[in-house]
Length: 331
Image (cartoon, rainbow, N blue to C red; front, side, top):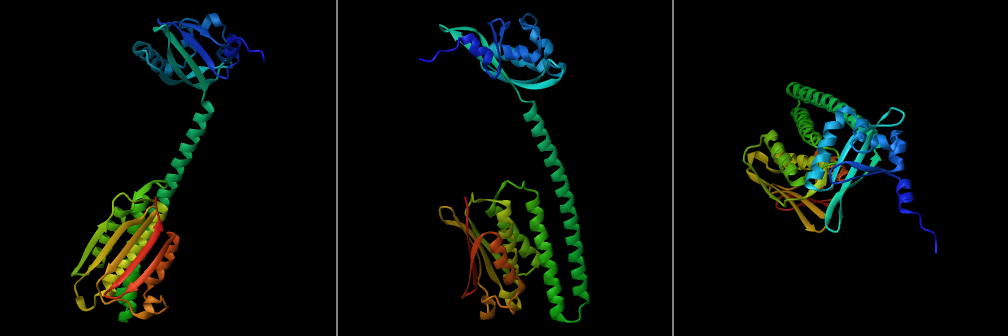
C-alpha cells in the first residue's frame, strides 16, 4: 500500500494559500505558501497581523467582507491586493467557508489564489474592446455621413435629369442607400455577439421602407412569431432583403396608384428552421424578372446575393401577386 503524506504536509504543499480562524475571527494558522508569499514569519501574521499586508485601499472592504461572513456564518468571497515579499502588490481571490464540529461553529477555513495575471489580461481585453468600439463608432459615423451625402447627390442628380427613366433610377438608388443606412444604423447599436429579435427588426424595416417610398393606398400586414432570435451578422442581410422586397412591391406591383396589401410573415415551420415571407397582391412579376435576367429590376438581382449572405434559400412565385419565401437555419 502506498505511503500517505501527513495532513500537515499536504496543507503546506497545497497549491493555494490557506488560513484558519476561530469563532472570534482571530487567525490561528497560515500554511507555508502564505508565508512564502508574504515573506513574513508566522508570528507576524497570526491574530490580525495579516491585515497589515493588505493594500490600504482594499483594507476596509476586506475587513467588512470578513466581518459579515463571520457574523452570518456563511461562505464569503472577496478580492484584494496583498503585498508580496518583494514589495509588489498582487491581487488575491479569497474564498472562505465556516467550519463546524459536532454541530458547533468553530471558525472559518480560507484559501487565496493569485489572480493578478488574470485581472491584467481582462483589463487589457476591456481596453482593447473599448478602443475597438471607439474605432467602429468613428467608422460608422463616417460611413453614415458618406451615405447621407451619396443620397443627397443622387437626389440632386435625379432632379436635374431630363430622361424620366434616368431620374427614376437615380431616385431609386437614393432610396436604396438611405434605407440600407437605416438598417445598418439600427444594427450598429446592437453588440456584435448579441442575439437580435428578428421579428421586431424585420417589422421595423418593412414599416420604414413603406414610409420612405411614400406610396399611398398600401397596407402592411404582418404575422410575426415571437422569440425568434438571430445573430446580428445573419439578421442584417435578412433585413436588407425585406427592404428590397417591400420597396420593389410598392413601386412595381401596384401601377396607376392601385391600392393593395404587402404581407410580412416570420415563422418556424420546423425546429431549427426559420421562414420569412414577403408577399403582395399586386400584378405579379413578368417572366423575365422571375428568371432574374438583366432586364429585371435591380432589387431582384440583390435579393439572391443577400440571401446567400444570410445562408438562406430563396423562392420567388408569381400568381395573384408576388411571393418571396426564404428559409434559413435558426436557434
